[in-house]
Each structure stands twice: as structure tokens, then as C-alpha cells.
Image 1 (tube, rainbow, N blue to C red):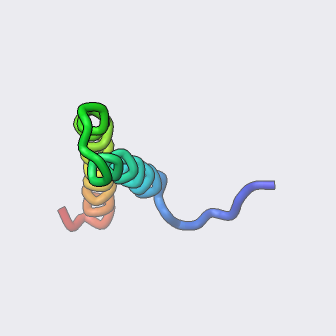
Image 2: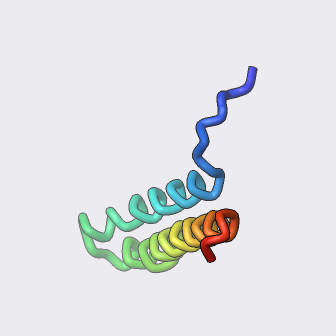
Image 3: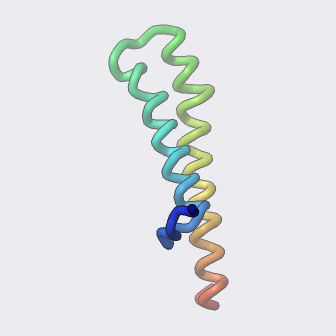
Length: 70
């Protein structure tokens, strides 16, 4: 019993997950600014957003190379 293939690449799924986690880590800072929420934002939120962007960019470049557009 395996799940059907959805056609969405693994890197895109991982980038969406990392971005979602980054946004979740950013919300407490928007609600209330404390030193703890700022540390969570700086050390967890921003790196997760950056990781999501990096994974998506890697996927884009792989697709461009596969179609020989790059």
C-alpha cells in the first residue's frame, strides 16, 4: 500500500515545509515582542525561510537544466 505519486517534487515539498515552519516561528514576534520571541525569530524563523528559498531555487535550476533552458 503505497501512496500515489502526486507529481510534486520532493524539493518543492521540503521548501514549502521549511517556509511554513519559518512563518510559524515568525508569528510569535508579531503577536508580542519579547527577547525570547526575537531570538526564536532570528535563530529559527529566518533560517527556515532562507532554507525554503534555497531548496526552491535548487529545484528551479534543476528543472531549467533538465529542459536545457539554462
